[in-house]
Image (tube, rainbow, N blue to C red; front, side, top):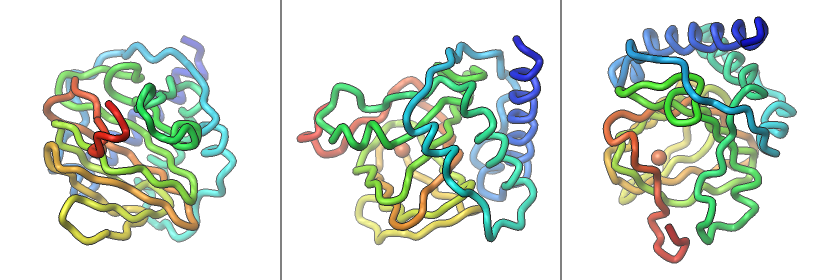
Length: 205
Ligand SMILES: [Fe+2]
């Protein structure tokens, strides 16, 4: 492993350990995994990675732990195995082109663990991530930007950097960005092996 790669990933692990220790919601959801092993990430690029790194992030943040988590996730972007979630479904190809996600802990991630999974999610401005669900419980921690989160049978909720959103097992949820992009650290616990599916059967599985 190149020294540069090593230092970028050391920084990312330290930044996320701090976030897990200090974020008031995340620390109760799941600890940074004590069983973390080196993962099987194979570097792959994605148009969303370039868009993410061309954004002007920042402004309004005064939380050093959050800022470091954001910047460490951005710095690790070029090393990551970017995913194409929902490939093969009937979702508009514009979504799969613009929606960005790489695994931090889990399959195709920098680390593996039996206790949790962690992902970096990027959404540019003006993107709708339709209702979907999965058996894993999920927590979003917003690292930068803002978005509207919706959960079945509940009113939409506007969130910004520092906020957390919890999704219970199999409860459909959706996210929409308006004028600003979104960067979030997403963690899962329980049922880690079952990927999300669209809630609307017309979108396919
Ligand atoms: Fe989810």
